[in-house]
Image 1 (cartoon, rainbow, N blue to C red):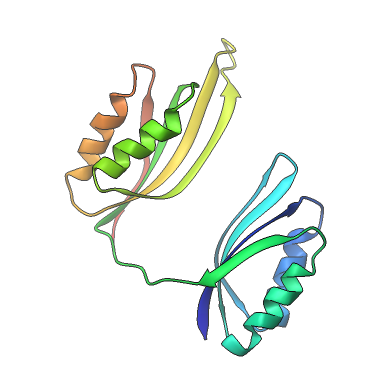
Image 2 (cartoon, one colour):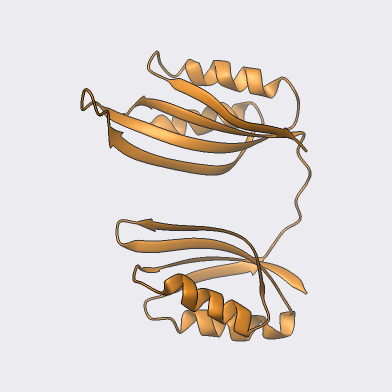
Length: 169
């Protein structure tokens, strides 16, 4: 059994997850991890699957036969064990360059961004444009959490950060 990573996108419609899950199951695959999302009429997914190599090509062919499907795939890599996993919520006034600033701050501290979900919204009481993100990070030492929080607050006085989850590996 091998582990494979598939990224795909297709115009969204009802039943896509079922079609994908049926193809994986039909070819003996095991669905290990995924992120599935609808954004602006497009269904996008990242899937980590375990499947016998002799069925891999047939699975890819089945997925590619789904109308409108575009996908890429590769053998999955090995993962090193981090010191700590941390999930933060960040809210700030929306402006160009925020994702660049956040990612630069994390990268400069040697912190890996594993998950990043963001959205634009208007503040209910003022109508001000807000940027809201949930960020999953892996830290390699104990000091990185404090240093990252300080660095993120340097982005501006409008930045609000909440620690959602933290766990030692």
